[in-house]
Amino acid sequence: MPNRSMDFLSKNFEYILDALPDGVFISDVSGVTLRVNRMYEQLTGLKQEQVQGKQVRALVENGVFDKILNPEIVRTGKPATHVQQLQNGKKLVLSGFPVFDDSGALRLVVTFVRDITMITRLNDQMEEQRHLIEQFHEQMAYIAQERSKTLTPIFESEVMQGVVNMLQTVAPTDASVLLLGETGVGKDVFARLTHAHSSRKDKIFLKVDCGGISETLTESEMFGYMPGAFTGASSKGKAGYFELADGGTVFLDEIGELPLSMQTRLLRVLQDGEIMRVGGSRPSKVDVRIIAATNKNLAECVETGTFRRDLFYRLNVATVTIPALRERPDDVRPLVEHFLRYYASKYGKSMAVMEVAMGILSRYQWPGNVRELQNMIHGLVITHKGTLVSPRDLPASVSEGLARERCYTDDILTGGRSLKNIMADIERDFLQQALEVHGSVQKVADLFQVDRSTIFRKVQKK
Image (cartoon, rainbow, N blue to C red; front, side, top):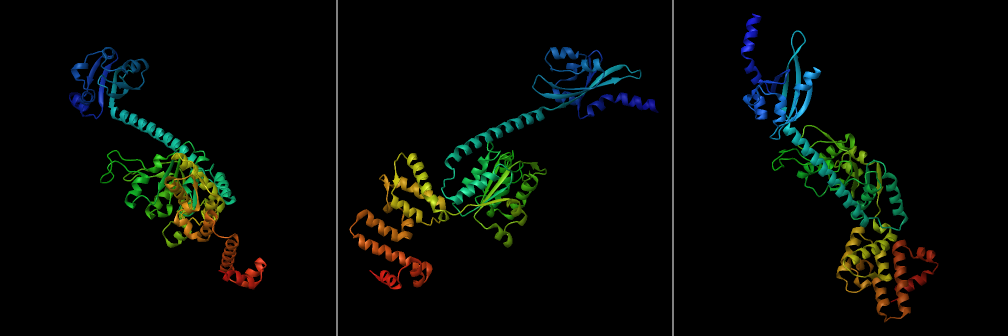
C-alpha cells in the first residue's frame, strides 16, 4: 500500500507543484534548474523551457534576475532569504531550503517565491507620504511662526500680564489648556502663544473651528476616513486633523459647539491618544497637545447636558480666563497704536490718533473686544484722508455711547463757548453721573464735600 501511495504521488508530483499558491524553483547541488511550477511562471513571466536545464549563475549573468540562493544554501546547508529583481522590474522574495537524502547528503535546493512588487510600491508610497507630511508640518510650523509675529499679545495691564505668565508656566508641559473668554478677546492669539512656548513649537499648530464645520462632516474632517467609507469619499481615504497634526498642537476653537457624538471621540484622543478613521476597524496612535477655547460657560453646559462631564474634567486641567477689553482699558492705547502701525504700513500711510480721540476710545466699552477694535482701526486707515484721527472721525458706534465726551471735544476743536460755560456743563454732567451711580444726593454731598443745595443748583443750571 505505501508503495502504491508513493507511486501515485510521484505520478502527480507536477500537478501538486502547480496547485501551490507560491512559486517554486527547484535546482540541484550543481546549480542546474530542474523544475518550476505554474505559479512561478505567472509571477516571473519565465516559462519552464526558458530556465529548465540552465545554470542559475548563467541566468544571473544573462540578466534574467539579479540574485540566487542556490550557491549560498549549497555552501552553508542552511535556509536563506533574499529579495530578487527581474528584468521587468518585478521584485520577488525568495525563501530557499536545503533538501537532504537519508544519508544526510544535500541533494536539492527548493526555493519558494512570492511577489512583493505591490508591497514595495506601497512602502515607497507610504515613505513618500511620510515625507510629504513632514514637509507639510515644516511649512505649517513656519507659517505659524511667521503669523505669530503679528499675533503677539499686545497689553500693558497687570491682569493681562498675569494671563501671559500663567500660559508661559503651563506651555512647556503637555497638559490640556482651556481658554475662556468672550468672542473677540483673542483666544487664538493666546493659544498660539502657548504653542510657541512649548516643546512642540517646531511642529504644526492646527486650528479647528468646531462651530464652523457642519455636523455631517465633523467626524470625517476631524478623524479622517478610509477609502470608500461613504458615498463621495475619496478612493484613497483622507487623514483627519489629528493625524495631520501628529506631534504638534490642535487648537479646538469654540469647543462648546462640538456635537455630543464628537465629544465622545475627542475624549478617546485625550484619554488614550488614539483615533479611529470613519470606516476603519483599527485605532491609530496620535501624539497631539489639545488647546481648547470657548465663550460658553462649560460648567453650565455640563449641567444642561450639552457637554460631557468627563470631557470637561479632561479639558479643565489648566484653565485660563482672558478678560474682556472693557475690563482692561489700559490695553486700549497699545492695541490702537499697534494696529494703526500695522495697517498704516500695509497701505503705505502715516497716521496718528489725537489724544482726545484716544481718550474716547479708552472709555468705550468695546462689546466686540479686540476684534472690534482691530476692525475699526482697519476701516479708519482705509477710509481716512488725513494723518490725524480726531473724535469726529470715529465711527458712530463708538461716539454715540460717549455723547458727553463728543460735546466737549467739539468745543476743544472749534471753540465758540466760554470756559466758564464749558466747566459748568462738565460739573453738571459729573454730578448727574454721580447721582446715577450712588442714588442719593446726601451720599454724593458727603463723598465730594459739597452742600446739598450746591448739588441741586449745579444740576438744575442750564
